[in-house]
Amino acid sequence: MSDRNIDRKRPELGATPFRQFILKVHSRCNLSCRYCYVYTMADQRWRHRPPVISREAVDATAARIAEHARAHALDHVAVILHGGEPLLAGRARLRYAVESVRAAVRDATGGATSTRFSLQTNGTLLTREFLELFDDLGVRIGVSLDGGAAAHDRARRTAHGGSHARVLRGLAALTGPSFRHLFGGLLCVIDLEQDPVAAYEALLAHAPPGIDLLFPHATWVDAPAGPPGAYARWLVPVFDRWFGADVRPVRIRLFEEMINVLLGGASAVEGVGTTPAGIIVVQTDGHIEQSDTLGVAYEAAADLGLDVFHDEFDAALRHPATLVRQLGAAGVPGECAPCRWAQVCGGGLYPHRYGADGGFDHRSVYCADLDALYGHIRSALVGRLSELGGAPVH
Image (cartoon, rainbow, N blue to C red):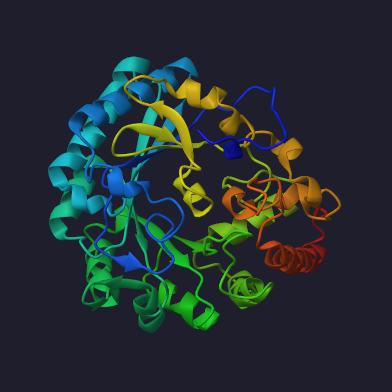
């Protein structure tokens, strides 16, 4: 493993157990998205991994998750079925994965640990047959949709053109009366060419329970498409429309977590606040890795040199590359220290801090956007709380 995974801060603190396990059930995809961090950026190891996870790797992963849950007396764990495109694994392999993990955790903990399953899909292969399977297994479904048709088809393409129409067919099946209870929400990557309010309204048209608005992955080496501040200027009108509504029609995780930390609370997502990283990834070959979004930085940036056949998840917890991401406030990049948002922002998403020196001890490449967005949200909160005579904002 390259020593670039380890920053200058050497932790000696205890680690927070993993509660979210991303299980890569398929390593290929039927779309070619222009911003995909798996296939278009620095880490190309997917080419050498098996396309679909084996039953042996599933069983070993299940045993390791159960072992971790028992060792740390976890009341619940979350397993996200992921890819590539996870539906390419097929119904039989997906059923096997869910049932194997659930049984292993139940047997190891005597039922004391609940296991929650979700799946993130591009939606193009979502059929009634898949939905019946997920209904039977209790798997919630998130769908990637980049707003309106034109923007979506610019970014998320098949070999024969845009994928928007196929995604809408999958969403229609998911959001019908039989399966809407499985709908976890929509994931949308910001496209500066798309009108932000129009994008928001296109997402709202599907009445999702939640929306994730994501910055395209970028680093100080591979810069974002837009200039500093452009992404904040895109997000602010969406925030104003959402925050100004008498009754908010949907949860937008980015905004909610920023509000949480500005009000003195903790964040439930990486990239906002200083909450220790609690996610670990298992690849189709059984390798245990950090978040694969680190692949935007350099080849094997997420690699820990571990796998589920030989190593427990506690070995990943003890790894310096994990510990450095669990330092909390002490892990804020040095150059962020003078910033007014240092403790609420935390320096931004870890992969977005990667710099030309080969390390991550830098402010986010989206620093200007985060500064403007935190400032705007804080002003909105101050105004609203002053009307209500509420608590101060950090």
